[in-house]
Length: 76
Ligand SMILES: [Zn+2]
Image 1 (tube, rainbow, N blue to C red):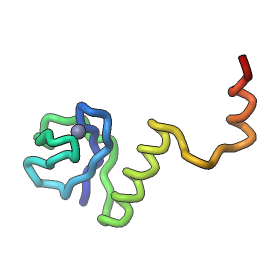
Image 2: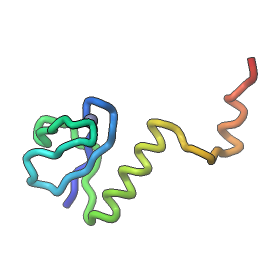
Image 3: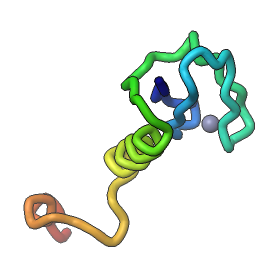
Image 4: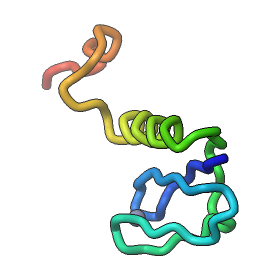
C-alpha cells in the first residue's frame, strides 16, 4: 500500500506505507505519521497517477480545460 499526503509547500507526495519519512523536492523531510493521509493506493503506478491528478486539481490543468470551466473565466 502507498499513502498520499501533502507537504507544507503544497506538493502532493506519496510514500510506501510504513515508511517513516519522505523527502519532498522542496528539501523538507516529512514524517508520514504526522501528515493527514488523503488516500491509500495499492500500487506505485496508481499512487503516482493519483498524485498527478491531485496536483492538477490544486494547481489547475495546464493546456487543458473543459467547457464547464470556461464560463467561470469571465473577462474583466
Ligand atoms: Zn515540500
